[in-house]
Image (cartoon, rainbow, N blue to C red; front, top):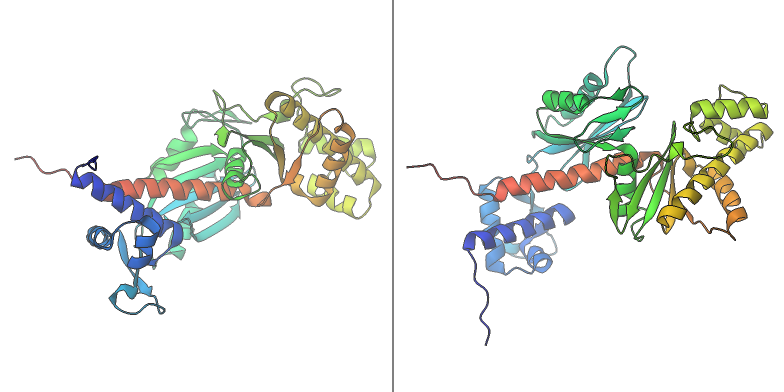
Length: 382
């Protein structure tokens, strides 16, 4: 008869502790019986681990299960003062901040446009402080931040945008003012992670998310994993060559929409969002503009498909507007005999980058907190 493997009791306690913490983060407060069912641990193991976690300030009583009788009816949950992570989406005009707990719940959020004479870092810090003030009754530190930004994000957290590379200065300034680690991500990549986790791409092994805002970007998922590329350039599809667009010119941007409007006899000062609404009302010039933008997006998707062959393309941002979706699918239908393309609509619309940042921030917070809670303190030397 084979003998069961034996191991250090400390390791076993750590594994059991992480199983219980993950269960509480995933499903919220539970009774001991529910934790036994969720984790497969014995009653004795659950009781011992909960005692350890309570002493560490990681869990606390969280009400009573009215359907259960006896001492086992008490629920336990993650301690409300474990702290938070900041999830931030920055675009060219505004910042949206959300404070999330280890369970992934958004506890406070605030959105505001960038003032004319204030830098981005000071503005974001102000929004975080506003959220912390909202949560003044729930004391807890901000342990880390995940920031989604437009532009190319390098492996070391530097940003290449319209102002050129920043060498990590933006991340360093935020980390200094927030007094916690800061992770910078491309906003379209975060949108793709949101769709991969709980959105339209959750059942797909591979897809490309096409997010249309001030420009066009792609978040690429291959075999269930986000593909950032060697230097962070993967997904910069706005500059894919298209005839007769000059090499290096953007396929879609605010300036491009203005030029298309002039050619179509429309208002060059209208945004693409305004043209989409006008197209829905039957405006001929706007209909022509939307049709051309749709054609360009389909050609981008076709180029990506010939290289990566994803299962589907997920349309996000302005590309998820019903008029744009209809235009894209209409053009795609014309090419279907040569190259079938499948287009889905984002589950989150313009909020996809923030949803992705919230998910990544919550996961990182759980990892940091649970490791700290379950790591034994070093014994002082003799």
